[in-house]
Image (cartoon, protein in one colour):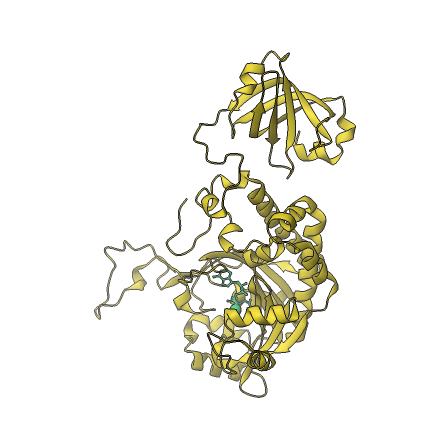
Length: 459
Ligand code: 4AD
Ligand code: MG
């Protein structure tokens, strides 16, 4: 059985014999008795196993090393110790897989940096076990939220020719032998000889494809891996991350803000309900006040300000900025931090200068700004980026030209404006940044199982 099922109603098992398989987190013993901290991964809490001198396997058990895989059968009894209500008295024991003396995860505090280098073993620690369970539960919450609200889960392609967030941001996919790349008569790479007959990338966003499905299903969402080449060595950027991209037909900018807020509250509540031990642990050891923060989000209305108002606020602040706030410019990390701390919670920033945002965003009547919205949260910074899409064919074509987008590669996308186009909007939620926000973990490398960042693609 799983330890999780045992803990669900441990009293029911009092005096009964059960068999468990799992790993040894710690083994402490004296001459007459010993304790094993046993964890099978299904539950945050470990089960204490007790063995005494009268057990004929006493010597064998007392030598079991940390990290070993074991199978135990024994009675569940009330514990006399203070750390737990119940424990198991081992009757029979089997070593399934020994662990060497140089097993790196010893029962002591390891730094997160050390564990990052042990990415294949770190899920066996309390911290990472909790992080990756929350990650799994949050993924489920997201599917449940969208499925129960009539969205269709759409699988956007991983290989693409479409340029959504900038082709310079995308990894190239090729079957060429890179030492012998075919060239044309001008010395340029001859992609006509490649598998697809033209240049192909690994997706940096499923949005453009998602829009086509939204114009058939009204409401869709994607949930999948995303790759970007940016060389940003920050705590919030990875070269491979997961993104959720809902797209909704007949929806405007205010509409997606409502959805984002509703979705986030749903996920937070779901994770707090399903992972109480994990959230308690984070609250105690990772971010003090995490529970209060999340509870406050559940009951508060998210702030909504325009980019112009945000810059006003930053200019008024008595802070010496590294980057001077500017009405025509992006908002820097230090600005995000100030704004989220000022409002002490999530903040929507809308209506951004058109030149610094993507080509598909709907131009506002002022001709200067676009109907874009970023959701900023304390710690993770930009958690969600979204916009109303430019549905007017002529305006879209103008924007594409200004941004230098090759129309021939996305003619199908442009066509959707000719075949029953309508106003629509969507957003992209960075899944790792969400997990950072839910757990208080400050570094994106610690919320994705095997992080890929510049100079780091081991395993
Ligand atoms: O703001 P971004 O680039 O927007 C898009 O890709 C749109 N196509 C989304 C849409 O409207 N459908 O990315 C969306 C979110 C960001 O807000 C951030 O949370 C996350 O994706 N993100 C990253 N997360 C980790 N590492 C990176 N390098 C990220 N780049 C973006
Ligand atoms: Mg963005």
